[in-house]
Length: 346
Figure 1 (cartoon, one colour):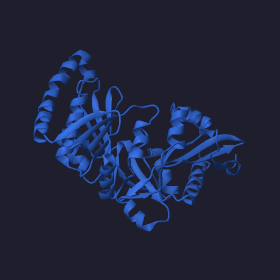
Figure 2: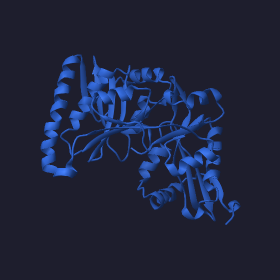
Figure 3: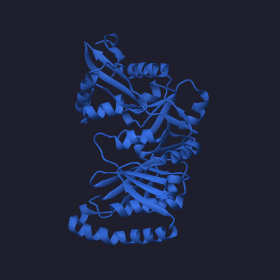
Figure 4: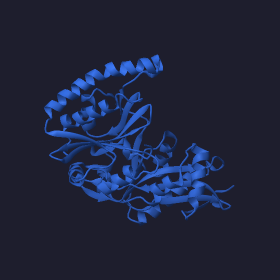
């Protein structure tokens, strides 16, 4: 079969049924129609840019850039996150991956997209760099705190172990609570009132990050069709100063976001120690986070006793379209603040 016989076109309504089936057949991903609509059609920032490949009217490939705007020192930049790119096994090696990417980027750039980024696996990373103009920025760091060893000694002993292991956490949290008498921590299933001013100050002081306003966070976490998130809110005089977003996977707790208005390390460590204590009596065995920034994450997580592995399988990279000033900032790791919840896997 020749390359010319592969048709590359834009998404058409109804394609999602075939895309969802392909995700299951190729990657083993069970995505619901509700989640697809939430992520690509009903995104608060707008609809995704989707490209498909066909052979004899049968879909054989898919390339998607979901909306994911960036913040450049407080200014919103139209951008997208590449995700769900796949080619059916019998069509690989025919440049279908490259042709879909070129068409997808061309269509998105026409609509004002300034950049695309993602966290590709090793297989797709080389193709993105060699053929689609991507640059590797960094690997996300891995932070984890083990709160159980159930596999070693069973659930009953592990329950006792977790109680005694939690004693230092409780003592530390008690001390930090004494030192921060003016602060209050609230746990909620909803974002707090008055968060926008805090988010604006964070955006203004970060160089490059995902654009996070209340509307985006509400879409990302509160309105997720398949997953529940918990908000741990740090208040000062009833105003939100900090926020940790977490989700429970049973044996592991994922910290999706760690935000603080002024990136105050002691206050953020107080909030994170609360999160440790909150999940200490759960069935979880580990609390984990992936992220990268100029040092705030390292300082807070190390202060709370997390182990830090300076690299992970999350490769972070991307490409800028025709904006040299943005590109000069884009490729420097130290300019970025990226958290686990900024990926499309959590």
